[in-house]
Length: 173
Image (cartoon, rainbow, N blue to C red):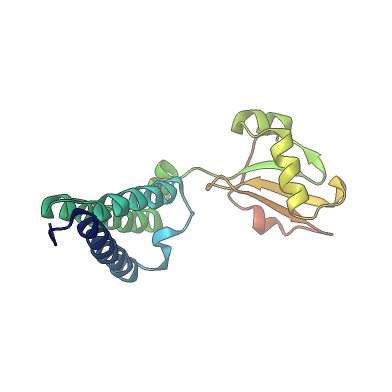
């Protein structure tokens, strides 16, 4: 307890511990780099959710050990992410092991039903993403790609450079 009044103690504890924990996260991000909370891989997404949960736990701690444990777990996650990112950068084999490949859902106005089924993306979800990308006619779409993050990228216009689709898996071909 910081002070004898339970209500004031809870408020003070929450403010101090949450501030200290968020400062710790900022320090870790500064050390680890801008990629810390990117959405490049599924691991990055899990890392973001886990850090948020640990941050909440640290802000609610009632003992020193209950505060330090989430901070150390955050450090471990950042170190693990750093190590995985280095291995992904250096080894194509490791990258293929830990990272999904993007999948082509649509090409030159044609929706690939088999790709939608394999990736469990509904046609309605794809069409919603096309609308969100201001597509006015399916024939405008050069490619729609389900990215490794779960986002759908829509490339539309007159032409699409082939190198933009490098590494994208095609289920229909």
